[in-house]
Image (cartoon, rainbow, N blue to C red; front, side, top):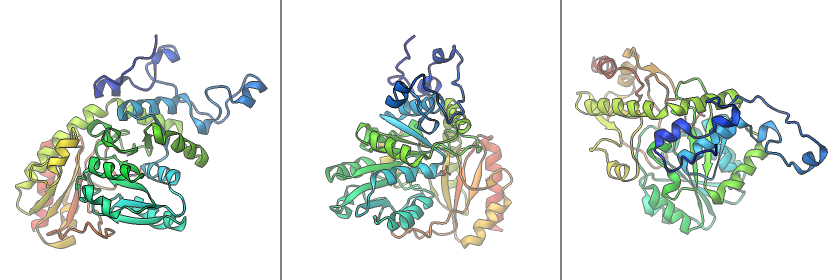
Length: 389
Ligand SMILES: *Cc1c(COP(=O)(O)O)cnc(C)c1O
């Protein structure tokens, strides 16, 4: 049986079937977890010509191919690499496309470790680094230089969730000959498909919703046709492949990502709406709320919202935020997100150079898990009561 083309089918059908063809492995539903360094060749002629599909463990196995093909089906990309963390999914494409003397524009609301990589390693390698206002839109034209090679976007923003006008930014960048990369971890390819909006490279911390269980670190980078060979070549050059068990766990997580995300979305929106009307809460930063300044662009470009957003307390500074967090019993105090369990954290946004908001009080980020909303609401009530005390 020929492998079916799932590209025109619904997202949940793609999640359930894309990647591997069970007939390739005796009908078993899931692909094998191939642990491999060495691949044997039948003779020297084949070896010298590298004339077989698999040549060495770092360059791909049936397990990594299954995940990469599944992500391609979701992203509409020409090719996908699988790397050992979401941070590696940021650094590998930057190393692939930037050279000494190039200029990069990065959104000021970027995931902090991305900024750290740019400010330290990229600068040391002779790359000029500048940050832009996440709300700049087509105005990015004024920030572009003749040597701007990459525009790095992330929408919505880490921790503060401002929505960027990705199509407008991509149009300008493209006209100026720059490559557009997007960290699309928040939306997953189910709620936003960057390549459909002019982005060249889509980046994911597969650690988050794709893996979904807080037990795996992985990243994926998906490229359009024009950027794929350079991305793949850099991946081979750096040798930063992801281990087979982790790759398999991400593929396993993907199969249920659609139903998990529906629940994350619904619960997070319900709590965000409720929080908007609670005393002690000054703002709720969630692009799915009609009150959010980015709501119109979010509605135009995205087909959903995932389960992470922030609130700003009504005065009291950091101490009131800590009182809120310490009172929680279901929301765990910890970094990362995208797993089945709820988490809360007071993120630091002092690294920003442009997008500085004067918030009324502590900024608290909530990852809404798969628990019952009534229990989560009661937990947040405990937090608000402690903050008010
Ligand atoms: C978590 C995260 C990453 C990094 O993922 P890790 O697997 O934890 O390294 C990258 N980008 C964004 C937006 C993230 O939230």
